[in-house]
Image 1 (cartoon, rainbow, N blue to C red):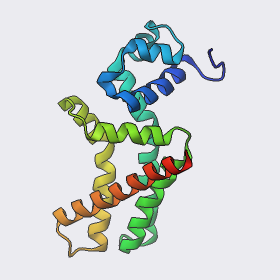
Image 2 (image 1 turned 120 degrees about the vertical axis):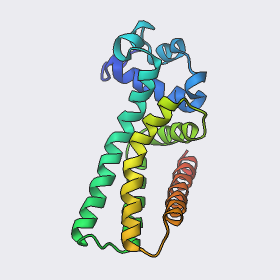
Image 3 (image 1 turned 120 degrees about the horizontal axis):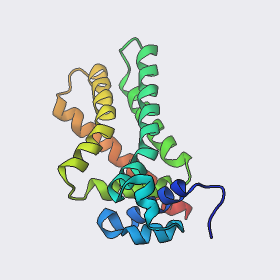
Length: 181
């Protein structure tokens, strides 16, 4: 039964997020996506010009706003500290924004599962470039802030540091989702 509160495009995005998280991009067919959204198969092409664009819109819908809020929070921190943040404040900003964003919206654990699946999938160069465009600004900005807080660290140490923090946050979010279920 169709939900009149959501547009066809919204229903497709919601259904696609769920199916892509469960089955991956390759495992979810356009026919399944349309059926889950209770729309005609042609709606995928009409609204998104195909499954690839639908997939990208699912990612962008959640990720772009979160990325922008996270970068804005870091910018505020850097302004408050005149470009000399303490390491604990950088970590607090990154973790706080990530956790708040991931847990604030319904469906975010599903989106996190989708992102986890995507990060471990073999993807074409085009998809790798797409993700790099979304993730790189956050990674670069926070890496620079860590280097400002700890100029003694080498870049490879900063990279491991960042990966560790993000990995721990993702683990917490997935575990919390399971505890709440």
